[in-house]
Amino acid sequence: MATFCSHTECDTCPAQVICYCMHVTEDKIVDALQTLGLRTVREVRHQTRAGDGCTACHRRIQGLIDENSYDAMGCGTEPQGARRTLAAVH
Ligand code: FES
Image (cartoon, rainbow, N blue to C red; front, side, top):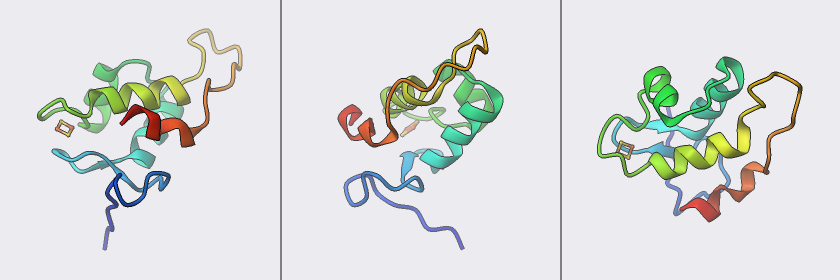
């Protein structure tokens, strides 16, 4: 049975819901970013369906992209920020 968190109750939980319309969690988005090399909100929408509703989560998705995407050239650049900074995006 899946358990979903609210960002107001659990800011740092990777299972927190990022997209409420589509019930997509942070860990699902981060996994897609890291395994598929996604770099845009459009790509995240296509792969995970996060952001396909009201669009209110797009800024949070972009924050996850900024924090978790690797350089497009594949030169091994580390993600720019720690996941814990997501709270600043809210
Ligand atoms: S909260 Fe993500 S589309 Fe509405």
